[in-house]
Length: 406
Image (cartoon, rainbow, N blue to C red; front, side, top):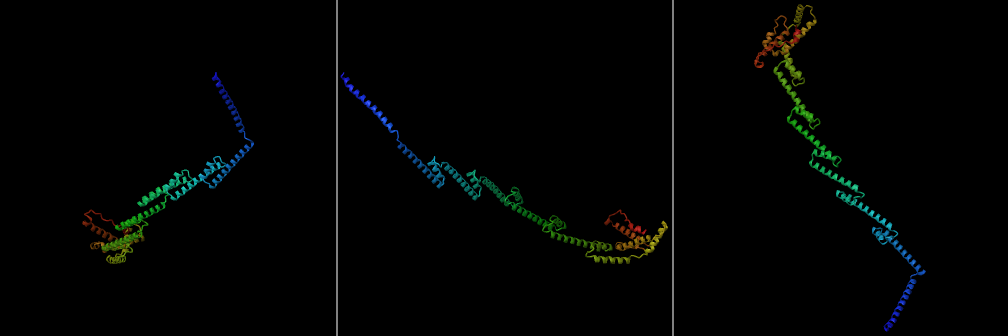
């Protein structure tokens, strides 16, 4: 009981403490609620501070933008974007960065192209394409590479052709590189080689003609090389050979005429060589032989003979004697006499004695000539060592003489 009494003051104290605590809590809450409600002055100050901060931000933004524009570099615009990601100039800064990067790309492209052009090699143009495959000069670079490849092949083919130095090599070059850098020179080389080949062939043909030394050889040269270097000389050689051949033929003919020693032989020489070296002498020989022959051939009164012959024909055939018949007989007799005079050297003395008889009744030159020719031809046939053993056929008397004399 006593214990319970002692515990009662303690419980009352605790309850009082708890009541005080609750009151304190409520008072504190009320106090805190009163403090959380700002006054109008506090709100105005806050707004002013916010406006000042916004102005400061804007000023910093504009200053940063002005600095970036002043610098004008990608780095400056990038720094602006990093510092003012929501700034007023973010879009323009991004555009400036894109424009500057494009400009830098173009500048690098142009510089790389200028370097490639300066080098002028296939390797330089290939490097440009590798670095700027979509650059402004990519197509031109590829064209230059193709041109350089073609030029390299052209130069190599030309060097090979020059090294070979033959017409076939230069012809092959012009066929493979019809628009090549050396086509004109290749054609000049071909023309020079053709001309040299023609000259060599000309000189060889001339040397061969000179070696043979005949008219046929020189004529063949002229026919093959009508405008050759030796045509004039070839014609001179031909003229000289022709002249020599003519002289040789003339001398041979003269020697044969002298050997024969007849008027016919000398007359034949004159007819064949009208301007020969022995024409004057041949004519003198003919005149002398004819003069001598006329002295040796007895004279016949052919007028009397022809008149008698014409009368005999009238007796046999009837009719009358005409002047035409007598004239034909006279012409035949005169021709027969001239032939006897001309060929008298070919008749033997025995034959002339036997045939040329003036004591016959009405002697006739036609009959004498027939007799002389027959005897002469018979004597020729009697030489077996020259003509063989026979048989022989006697020559026919000339129809003109027979007709005219009968």
